[in-house]
Image 1: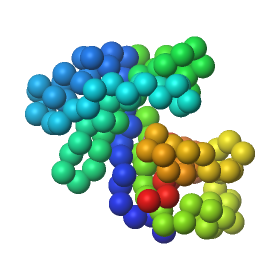
Image 2: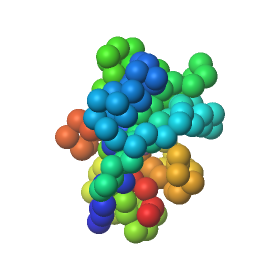
Image 3: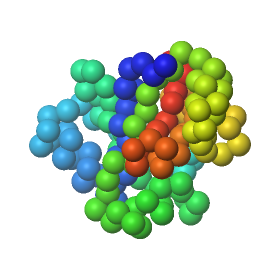
Length: 134
Ligand code: CO
């Protein structure tokens, strides 16, 4: 069902510093910060040859990653995103297996303008999973 790893998202307390680590220390190509008010985050995209890393920083006072950063003040891996061909079919298959889909179960438009859903970390080895229709 799942295909390519689309991205790994890392929540960071200092976007400037995290960008510098990826750009200057690790030598990766790093985008400018992109505010995504609808998602409550500012994102920096790190382009790797085979996938992306997304550095996430809270934006606004109801950011979905604020609590995570409170629990992980140094930052940490927030979620991994896998591509699926048909997100509604993937959701139905997962739900039929008793997996928990977060929110109302309806795909939302993600940071890349494509439909996404999030899956409960307790059902997936302690990792928050995003599926994105590729
Ligand atoms: Co993501």
